[in-house]
Length: 120
Image (cartoon, rainbow, N blue to C red; front, side, top):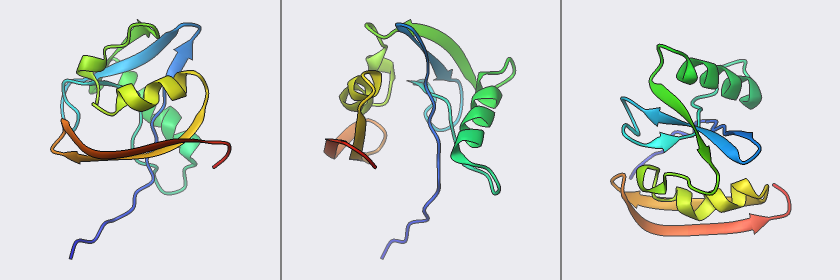
C-alpha cells in the first residue's frame, strides 16, 4: 500500500500585457522545461509569500532557472510539461479551474480531468 505525503506548493506566472514570464529549468526536477516559478511553502509562510520568495530565488542571477518573456500567443508548449497545453488557456483567460493529470514518467499523460469552476 502506498502512502502519500501532502505538500502545499505554489506556482506563479508573471504576466505583463500579452507577455508571460517563464523560467527554463537548468537542473533538477523538470530540467529542460519552461515553467512558472514556485515551490514548497515553508513553515510560517502564506502561499503568497512562498510564491514571491520562490520567484525571487529561481529568477535571480545565480538561480536554477533562466527567465524569459514569451508572447501568450506563442508559448513553447513543446518544451513545457505535457499537461500545460490543456490548462494554460484557462489560466490565460482568468478562469478558475480544477484538474488532475496522472503521468507515466514525466512525458506520458495516462489520464486527465479538467473542469472549469465558479469558485474553489
